[in-house]
Length: 169
Image (cartoon, rainbow, N blue to C red; front, side, top):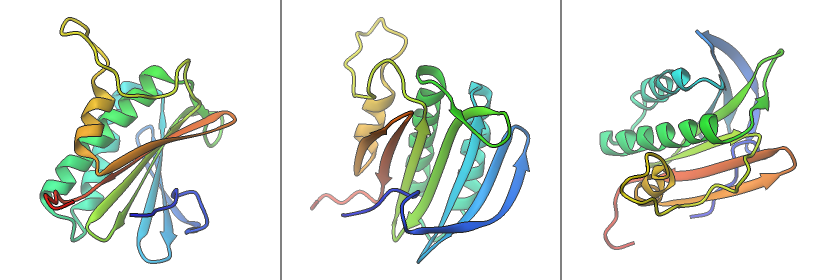
């Protein structure tokens, strides 16, 4: 499957804003499907807000419940990692944090989380059984159909595609 980042040419102008606590959701229209973008300040307490927004949005689509649940796990892991391990991005106004974007592509959900980059490029780790951290991208790797990291000056974006399980693939 080929896909482009949500912030590439496929996403059109902002249509409106919705403020939810410290979360600002911006709706953007894509050519064939709607893409969503949420700015999150860098507090772990915003992870449930992000998860709730994505869940409510995806439940209004034809995406299967299993794919939705898997997408929510990926959202949780990627947003948590960005908040805990990366520098914040400048957001609207004077706020800083991370940006979560998602879109429905057929039966799949594309998820992107952007931050200001950390001391290391995001990668799957093999933590010992006594380590408290280091399993997030292993979980994403197990759930996502594909995932990758895109870096540009001052910004790192982790992309993941979550879709139905296909044993023939």
